[in-house]
View (tube, rainbow, N blue to C red):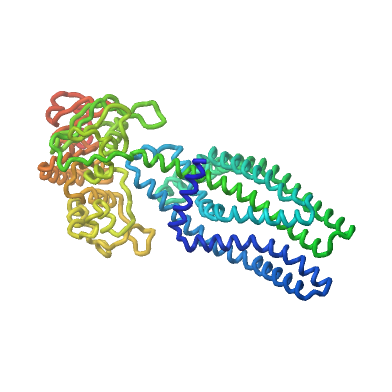
Length: 590
């Protein structure tokens, strides 16, 4: 019952966003399509009897009812198509916005990387139309029941035995619900296969991977794997559908037998002189209406189960995205002590292998800290913990003594900024692509230009329309950039916030040459030292050791543990891992 209440609240919320007028019109159009068969059945009796007896009054009554029924029946498909298209277009946009809100508002990344989350999200995107249908079901369902009851009572007045026909709706509804459960279960089991097929399709058709696909000649292999994933999914879903169709066929055979029985019963009454031609016409019409209404009701029962399943997927995503609710403590205006990691352990969900083990570290307020280590050492995971994307599996992170898990994630995120190796390509105008780094100053051209200068992205002013240039070759008049240019824009975004508490640059210069990286880090560290009055911590992550030697503190990670800490000169003097890696890299540049 709780699941149905949640479904109802969700549908009402979606209906309000779609628009009350559109929803009401849609319900009226769908309801009208159900009235045609009933009016036709009611009109046939006076029409036939009036024609047989020459009673013009009854003939006119029957003609009007039958005519209205035929007009409604003829117009219903047109109105239905219009209403369904409008509803589905709007509902798709509303559901997409809701999914976007759920994904974007979640403070962390942990649930987004779960396979279960991706499967549920894929099913929701695939079945968003069902939520539009659900709005109609909850309004039309009672109308269908009323239609079924009215026609049953009219049949019962002619012959009580005919009341058996509407009762066939009961097993039909039960079987429809069972069929939907089978199908939904099969879809959830094979959601990963559907996702795999879509990923393979994207891999073969997008420019980013297209070159490698052709160079390595793996096109045929991708097609073969796509076929395997498709067959696996289709086999499971179609097997479930076949089982449900078998049961449904049995119900419709019962309907056919009931309709035939109704004809036999009324013809026997006519033969006995207990009924006239009008009664025959009305019984046939009512029986057809009952069968149609019962079929609609069973279909609606299946659809209702489908809607509830989709709503349950949405509620699961909503619960995952809302796990941080209740964290309301604001961060400090400035850092006085710094950020401390105390016995931090971390492992990604779904795996027992730790990425970080017993990490204890203090990042002093106002310091420039460099984080170095080989691939897989745990550097990026540590960065994600510091930015609140994940929570430690054990231990804690304290920001000036306040547990990070107690801070309002949005307020904390507003006081940090970051540039990542896996940067986003915001295909917007240059001004907006950079300005999203600080939405409050997106339209401030002076701030945007200052950020571009800090990132060494002076090329932006030379683009065809300057800051108004749309980025991305996929848009009319859009400018495509090199990897290094895109990365400089990402660095400019990171430079937009004026007084961050924490600045994270995680391999932000992977697409730049060593000289450009060194010059950029010189600007970054100079800016960081100017911001020491706010206690700003600047965290640099880089594979290039020559660029991190200017840091106040260098932290060396290896195998998820901190092995060394100190200044560049101190670490070289120790002759440990840092010295080995530094000398090895320096040798390669000679």
